[in-house]
Image (cartoon, rainbow, N blue to C red):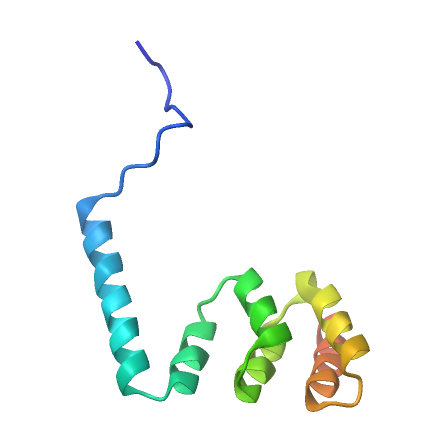
Length: 106
């Protein structure tokens, strides 16, 4: 007789959650096929996790996505901003990272 949840057992998804996730995935794929992917990514960036935002700030293909990600970074991501400044000090990304560091450093 078990008294607690077994951490080795996978979590069971509620059917409604599964259906909601499938719909979100379908909508995302539709948007990527029918809309400008850059716009779709910019829209998704607003709700992305801190890790994904940092990744976008470092490596996003579209300049607008990188710049928006840099603008969204907060104090816990100061090391990422500093890395961008060191790697690309004279680029628009380095300048944006410097400006963001100044904003969140105050």
